[in-house]
Image 1 (cartoon, rainbow, N blue to C red):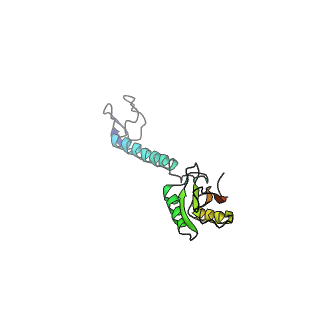
Image 2 (tube, rainbow, N blue to C red):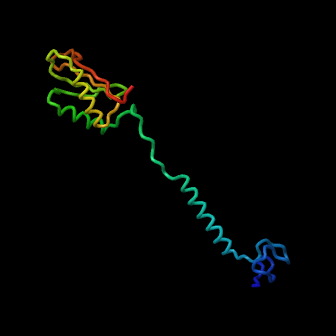
Image 3 (cartoon, one colour):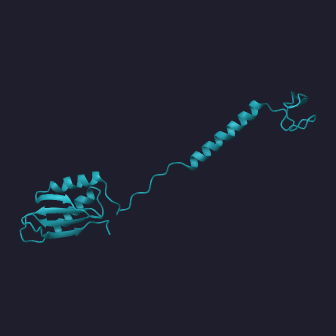
Length: 153
């Protein structure tokens, strides 16, 4: 049975004793370094436990009706302006993406073309928008076609 000195009174005690028989001190055979090492191990375990609970989880995906970001809007407008039938195109002021596309008025409805432009917007990441095909021939800018894009209200 190895003996150590009590940290409190200095008396000889068993190294495994839980209390000093002379002064009653708790853990008299344990050195401060041993206690510190034990606390350090417990601290490290606690740290990793908390870290695992706070692990970054992927943010939920934005809802389809969330406002489109500026980069997606710019990319979509570029795609639309590359279409041969488009004279001019811009975004309208609305709570959801509203494309105003000007074409030459040939006296036909352009709802199908508006639907096609919706597919371009969807491919560019714009969801829930609306496309208005307007006459570029007159100042009144009559509506020639319209389509609500998927993912909207």
